[in-house]
Length: 121
Image 1 (cartoon, rainbow, N blue to C red):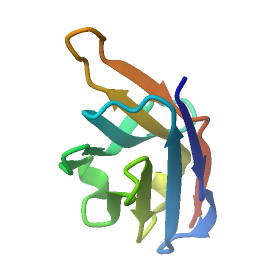
Image 2: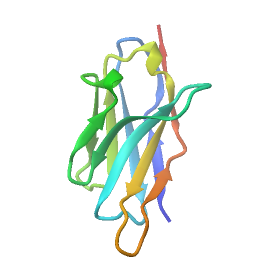
Image 3: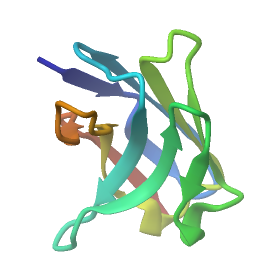
Image 4: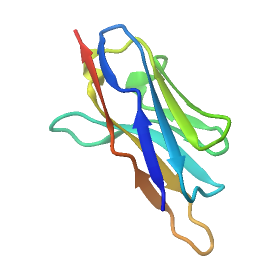
């Protein structure tokens, strides 16, 4: 059983900063990707940032230069440092773990419950 618990959301003024945290427990494969996704009201959930177990990062264009994804030393924690926040960043942010497939197990997605980020103008 895999659990992901997010924290750090809240209300912030435009230009401000927030740091999201996600702690993952359970069966985390050696090869995995941790990521942050967001979903605004009436819109689909989309990728914000991801980081592989090898440390490779990827960002959606709209957050490049403002957001930074990182892993904790224990490798089961992922952070999203969000700076220069804009009203359009308002959404529920979800933590995601993707365990890459092995010779005996298919690739599997796991999700946290989400944390609300609201940026006021």
